[in-house]
Length: 90
Length: 293
Image 1 (cartoon, chains in turn green, purple):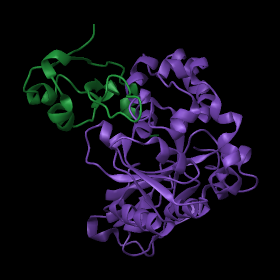
Image 2 (cartoon, chains in turn blue, yellow):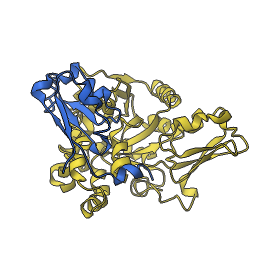
Image 3 (cartoon, chains in turn brown, orange):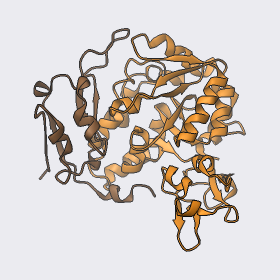
């Protein structure tokens, strides 16, 4: 019986991420570390072939049922490059 | 007994069966199943062979399909598609990766059963969500040995002895992190995680999308002895450490009460209790709970 409240939520904010504006998220991480619900994560666009280390990173929204936009806009405010925008579907 | 214990336990728990720690099991056909052929796997973005997921950082390290694709897979949390996905999950998840909560003593037994040293990597989930690097993903051999061969880039990693691994587990337990053993695939106990909400991807899938088999409850239930519990003068230490919301404090009685349906049997409350008021009892001894996972 965990997460009953969240389970009923089916509206998921659409999180748009602009890689061109963002640059390299792995050196900034401001949006990811600000998000109180850990909706934002980061990873390389493609898994690198070992033994290469990853060279590029993108921000990815995960488990968007947990996003409380528009009440919370912390990630948008935290981004120095205006690379995130969020909208409610429908 | 959970379904894995029945299927892979040979009379004991699946993760305590020595047979599941042999190279024969790891090299068996089971580990070569292609996830691409599985419809549910495609939907969730779980790709690559099981062996890759189990032993290499090649895909699994960064292609954490679960975090990203679960929203697309479960467009509506309550409709028929979602229900069908959840029902198809036990078969899929056995071939992929899923976990079960274990208390400290069982986690130590897993370390003991490992044929060799324990390979340790920083927690993948915490990294994914920008969290602090925490060296707490433990891989018993022989899977851990293979993983070490394949972790060839700059990822911090170390090989620790069994004693060191157990000491690490005890420290993490005191911090309030609960332990889980992950199969990858079943029945290989491939990894011991020290998890917390909200970083743990498997736990999020369980909490928010009700996918039971990503992280299952443990084989135990906590029991509070009301004669020993003094409620820590209104600020119970056990309650603060409970990830699952199973412990409630009653101002009237001044004691803590454990909801056994919400308890996952991780035993972190037992470690936190200064009065030794909490014990773990086997889930199978309680008829109402023996099939609740």
